[in-house]
Length: 424
Image 1 (cartoon, one colour):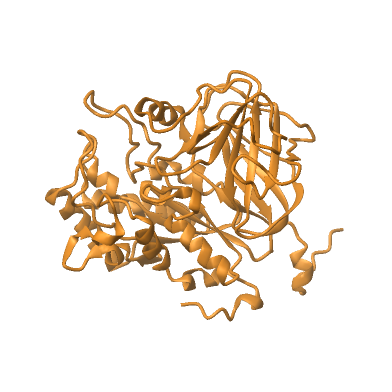
Image 2: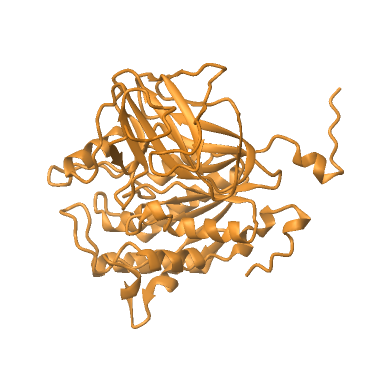
């Protein structure tokens, strides 16, 4: 007989409670391949007898960690010959000996196509806001079918020839890239009251316009605020550059850029959002690409109906869902025939925001538009908050991240010790 004691919080705290302390959304290989073609990021494709060391920041503390690896967008098996986890990385260098990640007790794993694997729990203490690294050795020729790449300033991955998963010096890691490959999430066995907040967004959420290495995204700002007031919550950034609510962003005409950004938000809710451990909230900030990309043309009603489908799916999974109004885009330079924004598109944006402000779609609406727009010219970003009239810069991201009331997440905290934080 198993006795469950529910009366004392200290006993509950000893129970296993896994929460995604960091995660990223998955893109298929064409995103990486086209990054190479544009020449923005120095990827090596495919990987062969190479080690990828990827850096990230966990939002939650705990004494056990496990890592989820994804091959969900590939058809062929991926062999990981060795894998390690380290804390306090300094670029490709790490302090202390990296710890071996195992899978069913083995130090190697083969991930079948369209699947993912989670490592065995690793006994290691991490703190909220601590940087860690995950190193994966690829002994075989391995096309990068599943990954996440960014167009912003970042060096999240370092590459070394050979098996250097347990190297500490970092000297052999001579290449860097703005990506995480086959790495889906890092989970922490945390405080029983800890929970996750997922951000479903596009390049504004993913970090275009800021320095991701310095954790300047608006989601990072929100995470910093939660850590500062000791709310045990992680902010898992599931933004994808170019993502849309309704349609996958991929070429449909010969004169478009040869770039594929990822599945539509509606179709990736289950894979990217609901797979996260310990999630209680979803924040949706999407729709500007639906308007600016014209293949196909969509209406405000189409976008609103798309929001409703996302909310319905998330509510069914027990999540509270918050939405954000769409920030200005007038003045953005057109990208070939792929993207443009003028008065016609602005009318759709205004209509979408008007519907959001009426309520009845999301559980709460954060008015990012009001925070970012120029009060003298509401169709445009405030000049000091953006460099390209579409993506917030560091100051703009601070404004957005500071503009989300932390009180929205207080009901996710069940512990009396978090009840008196003086939250806005």
